[in-house]
Image: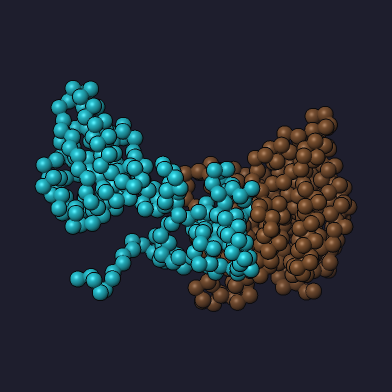
Length: 310
Length: 222
């Protein structure tokens, strides 16, 4: 299958390689060195790097500017864009801005509610939702037109992604929801952090049965746990997260100073297992404020060195 | 109905202090039903203000009235004899009523005694819940009769978002996930195939976004 955009991630996937992506959160300040340093730590071990967009609604340096910094450093960033903070004018404008720097990947999200962040008293926009954002990018790219119908001079050339949470409720629509995103035009999916591997495999099986895996690349999302405390926090406090009791028990079962190491080990084991699941097109490693561990995880998972593209 | 919350007494006192002739004006419609601005609540607020002035040793007259509808000019004009002797009116009607009063009585300050909150209904005595934001283009036929604009914290039209957990919204365990309700109802109606129909990008020009709205029924408007 030939790639439709210059995205390295798209080429990697279409060449049949399991892709590896990771993510970096921009700093809470204007010093770009922080994000560039995070990216340098992982750049040889991943094919593309997500830049989060004011994640958990905490105000940070903008995703677009951070992506530009990475792009200028020769990396392949994935622009995360939430519909929480922008109307359709700002969305199309930012897409063009990203395209002007030849940023070739976008991840379309709705974004956490602002009540989680540092501006709980703020408005949210949600002029579009994440599916409509997928449609918007595809429309701009494929039709070369604005939502308003006018032609775009030099349309964006972006590989279009979205998130999927195989664990959120209601479970009965998890696969239909994926089908809906595919119908909207999504080309790759990065999943929510997978701790419940059985449930993820069941979701993949159902997606495969519906023929969705021929239409979309699924990157399995993985987050190494740093401690039993983090495991419990994610289990109990993070919406839509499914951390089974045995996962918490395993990390809580080792001494505190060994828990981080155990967390990395568990993450690597998950990659090794999920690599064999038909349809898993790659991995999205979200090492939250722990980017330095990404190389170890990628190597441990047998995903290094990264394949060279022609 | 339009649902409102009573403002804290201290805030109302802060606004009316300095005046000696204060009228508390209620409304017989929505705010009566949601027990915040009817005759009964007018009486309670007026008593509280009288008690405050008494404690301060200030001689003040606090009057009470309840209009049939403060959002109807006919009734607002009809209250002229009652309103004009006063220095200030505390309207415990919704924001519409408060403004209609202010528009009519340009020599008398009219201030709100309630915070107008939403359009909703009573789930049980003393509990009201939002159902509509007046977006101007009703989607209920497509969403199994449950409104994602007013009931989803992100007004997601193709939901649910990833934050839905055990039927609840990510913002609070006390808030139902609108899309869980939609899916449950589609399921009980035997219409799950409708879930996969993409809701297109919405025209928000009929919403607040399009500017102040007006409705004219030609056959009755003069």
